Amino acid sequence: MPGGGCGVRGMSALVGLIADGVPAPSHRPWPRTMATTEQWRRATAALAEGRCSLLSLWAEPKTVHMALREGSDVAVLTLVCPGDTFPSVGAHHAPAIRLERAIGDLYGLVPEGALDTRPWLDHGRWGVAHPLGESRPEPSLTPAAAYPFLPVEGEGLHQIPVGPVHAGIIEPGHFRF
Image (tube, rainbow, N blue to C red; front, side, top):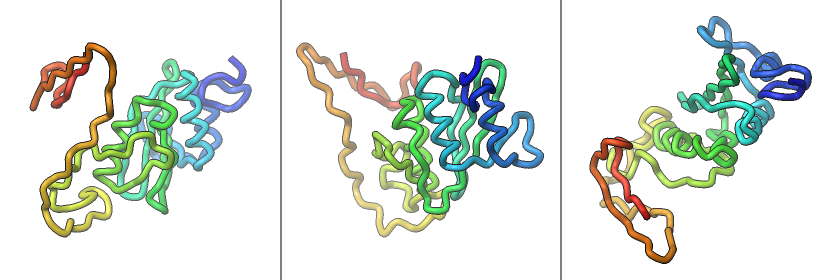
């Protein structure tokens, strides 16, 4: 379908997006491209429009990676983050929000325009900030601040705390009905 997918006009699937970038050598089993910020934004727009599926979003020091799928095509985009920032995927595709929060906690990379910047994994008890990135000792282990839960309002609201482990989601939570 012309103009469809994550690619450029006339190309479908991820083929066009990958073709626009600099290929990462010897990457297997799927093609990987060293993306520009513009290519990253185009891929994010394709996700927001439902033309691709997000398989994963992860990081390493100064770099983020995004795996995408369209039909049977799978590709990986890699974006170098020299300023420790990258365009938020979660701002346009909600399933990426928690992955971005984990990237921030573990690597110190900041998703620009993120809708939710609360910590996901690091609640001030590790003794080190960004342990997988450019880690630095935290000055002291102070009691963790109250976690800023998102507000929920409505008539007949019931909140049920579950945890520390719940079989369905493998994490503690507060269910609101």
